Length: 202
Image 1 (cartoon, rainbow, N blue to C red):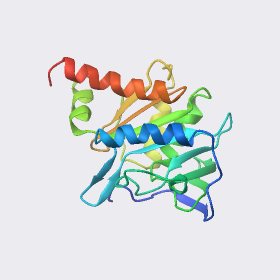
Image 2 (tube, rainbow, N blue to C red):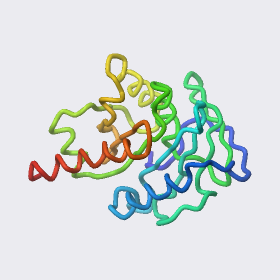
Image 3 (cartoon, rainbow, N blue to C red):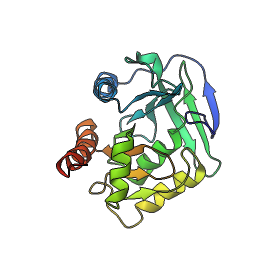
Image 4 (tube, helix red, strand yellow):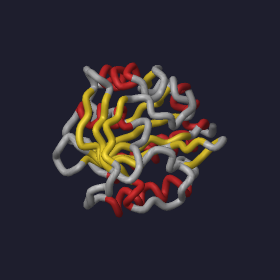
């Protein structure tokens, strides 16, 4: 199945996305990642997505499906995930557009630790290969599947996510996820991987 195809069950209310205070900060981050080519489009399929927790709740805002090709996202291209259920693999969302196909993967990351507020999913073949060579924390399941969500939960059964806030998606070519207590921490985790890659001369 092509990347960007939504695989979970979705109950979507097609109306304006609620306002969220983190929009400007999240969009500024997305602009930086888009400029670096870590978010974009390949063979007509968008890749890369971002999300931010809504205050201290389980809900969050995430980039809408198939937005990778857009250099700038207005508020309407961020979708609100008001609720989700891992047992039925379902999300409840609201917005002008449906959410990213990775919405439940983001949801699980937020579920593993209440301190996490920002999740970054980028694509880079070079970094993806590098992280596997270095035996970095990894999932193996296909993207957007229930197995993927379960693997994310399993990664952090005995690991502190605040110390291990990055993993490579072996079952999703080029896919890498970082996260943190804020935008800066999630972004720093990504740049730390990039710095190691450059320092080791790959």
